[in-house]
Length: 249
Length: 236
Image (tube, rainbow over all chains, first blue to last red; front, side, top):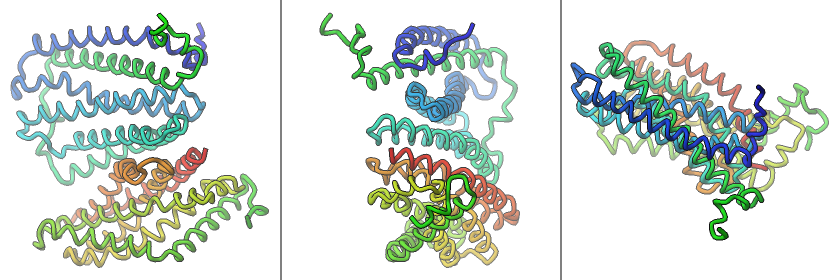
């Protein structure tokens, strides 16, 4: 079965599809989150060295993964937007940026709350924390550039170039921060030497990762619907939508 | 334009002709606005002076933070001069003519980047030993600092050109430029300042300088194309 991708590249066709997919992914996210939190807080054993404080990893690790992954997805849509001059791809990239920034912020926030009881400090200049912070700055740069340009088509392409330059730089930044960290810090703060994880802990983390994944998809789809409506507000198909004709109804 | 006959699309001569023309033009403009260049250098000198005043004149501490301070000041000085790269040319329509010229735009952009480095990066490289003396760095550390700056400041101009082109004619361009460009400068800062730290710790700075050199090659091959496409986006 060949799917006609070009058909779905039109905002008019994608808008109702996204409207059906977003609640489905939202429901999946809720189910997985409920299951993951139940595993994490009710079933998983207390950690021998970190006590109950470790349980924040069920939020922390999935958000940190998504923060990195969403940037890659955003760069992918940006590349498509530049290569094919596709409006919907640019809208997807635009819709993903706030979600990714939120994930990075959550990862930093939960990391700080985890660090306080276990390392005794909210913030250490650990390689992963520092590079996540810089990743957050990269997201905020894309969002700020978008906000500063009035013409949406110009903003699309400018943000796409920036996202791609950032995507090339992210591994270099990560490597350089790690380099700097090993030179300055030694092994004062290290999670890599953590003892082997109980299988229930791992299961909880994986289930929560799926929840974060589905939530990101649902949030991006919901946001892209709003973006489509805003950008296409002059077109006939938007004027014919039932949700834009509340007064007539 | 003088080069219209010799430089058709795709001819290798067009690349060098475009680069050389833009370089000569921007250098000539820079010489005619000398006072602006002096302001960049004074900015660097003042930022470097502020740090001991804000912390302590104690020699050991200054030696520890000196390389970092000198590098951060170089980053800020580069950032300060970035809007000059394209904004004036866009305002009077020259940039549009450059984009229309038969020379490849990345070549012209490369010439402008090189001119930017020669007028703002190179002076910082030359001024750095003096500032390093104020921070009590010794001969070997100063040599590594200068080598690192010589390799690293062109990367700042290259990456900065992308940011400068993206923020052309945009609301609040100055602050936005800092937000876009400074995170991308992080690796240069780390390897550059780290080179001096490494040599002071007796480790040798070869690895850091090699990485800076590799970064320079990658940036020189990639950044002009990204900056040129950003210029085209801004001109649409």
